[in-house]
Length: 446
Image 1 (tube, helix red, strand yellow):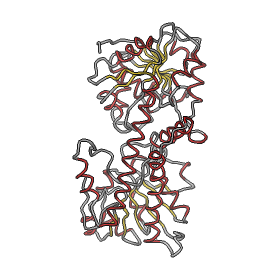
Image 2 (cartoon, rainbow, N blue to C red; image 1 turned 180 degrees about the vertical axis):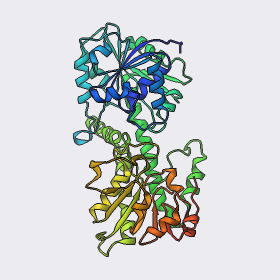
Image 3 (tube, one colour; image 1 turned 90 degrees about the horizontal axis):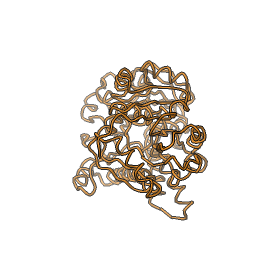
Image 4 (tube, one colour; image 1 turned 180 degrees about the horizontal axis):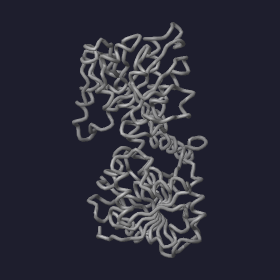
């Protein structure tokens, strides 16, 4: 790629993807204006106050804004008025029937169609169904403006690193004549060392869905494999270590847990399933991946009920301390958190729940009040509880004073659904440890 810096870029939407995209592009020397409809959020960002828990992002916003490379505005039209490239980083939540809801994308396309400069490029950065680039081009109705697809592959908790050290950059243009515009987008990343996949828009859009589906499939596989390990007395850590050394498989996404969730995998797998139905393509592996995730969560709850509940599976009168509520460590994101999915199933059986998460300390969450009582101190969560349930892999939980936890619990039991803790240490603290795919005698590995 050629080294092209100093481009005028607009980013519409300052959520997780938009803010990371804007700040990182600004750090590469481009002049970026980020627009968001939330005026209070814009004011906070102008003060370099970042609501998102993402390592390195607050510093990057502060430094690039101070250097004159990053601005924030509520005026979308002003943001795109002189932009060479406009990134659409808008929410595409799960809609009716599992399809991606494109309302935000379509609304913004209508707002900017008359103010886009001639010759500019509009980039779909959001995860969108196949055909969205064509749909946005139709909504713009501007033959002098090109629409391309440039999906993001950012992991929450590592988003800045992933943007600046990508393993690939995928850019798709609808027509061969639009490849020059796609190359202009590629040039924005010119100083980054990464392979660039220039393709058609449909292939780029499908690549994002395919990647997330494959990752979800590996996680469902690992969780089912853990159940098989429990049946035969095998160790899931050793089994996944044994297969993970095969370069055709790899070790990533083979750790069992409380199911997969987050802001991407659930909505993207359901959206892909909807796309398959609409296309008349049967994809049983995709259906099984989703169903296995739900079944695994019910299986874990059954285990808790068998240990602490009544003969009919009820957990009425049982209090549980839930440690970790975010969908993974390193983020404050609760969207489609598997921890909360487990919590709801436990609540349905009548359990009283106290929850603690390091990322939620000092906050009030009215949205959780009907589900659990949120506490800042994990010892307060354990006080009088019948068991602890570890649901997020926060390192802080590994380092808890487990002797103190044992002294607070009514029943000395820990259900470690992340295989995070050292069972030998917990046993010495006087606690019974239950992992996933392991017996208490097996130390956590991998």
